[in-house]
Length: 321
Ligand code: AVJ
Image 1 (cartoon, rainbow, N blue to C red):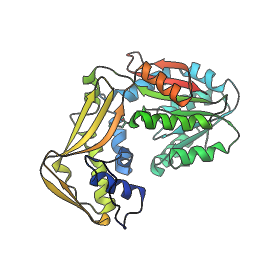
Image 2 (cartoon, helix red, strand yellow):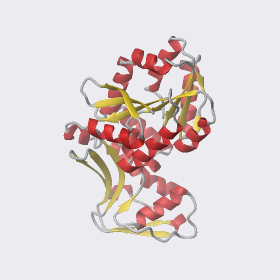
Image 3 (spheres, helix red, strand yellow):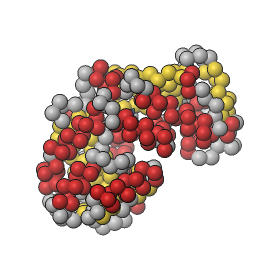
Image 4 (cartoon, rainbow, N blue to C red):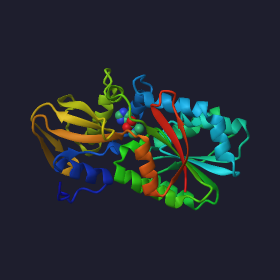
């Protein structure tokens, strides 16, 4: 698993990661690159699937507990509600609406890497929640958090959707530590954690019959084709999901159905696939109380409150420093 030589033409992060991931053994690509315009849309389609229970669970938790959450967040006066990876903000709007109705003094700061998603969110807020002050920020989580840290307001940070699950535990700790370092004593962090559950339910969520998740996973290849002049034949790859009920790790792969050679012109790279060779693309970690307690301890955070869905399928946890 050594880092391979980087071709001189390779410059952007995306190019670098595609180059090193596809010349590594076993091959891998980072799921963060799935989300271009088409990837954003496919993820919205995933969230609308009945089998992708995560969205409904979190929606239910926020809806059922909005009064308690409002009291918790607004207890120490005005604040910035900073959302990492806001996306379409559909679930957050439950809270925005509640805060707005209760005349809570706050500023909504949605952060997303996708300008497209942010613009849509900003526009819809203007129409649906005209009273809410929205200050979107486009960039990576850390660029944004650094920038926002220069603001004086108290911070309530949202990290919903079990997005943390895309990180392996050591990365998740690193991420939560960085957030912890930006928090002041009255600041709060609300995170969503998908829970360990019947393994079949998890496999069904990540392997729908209509092939939406397969298209989402393969979009990383489509993106290489369109942005890096690749010639992946998407038909010749199989979306494959596995779930380990002991570790709670769901993993997505793209498996080459045939022996094939792919050319990526802008990297001047030829990639060879043996039949049934894999590209690992994503992890979606599932949690239990032990893991959450451990993550909190490792990153210097204190768990103050946890809300869970009726089915115990999903949890939203509130942390302070
Ligand atoms: C957006 C990272 C929470 O891992 O459940 C959905 C992405 N991947 N179906 C997840 C995803 C396949 C999703 N997260």
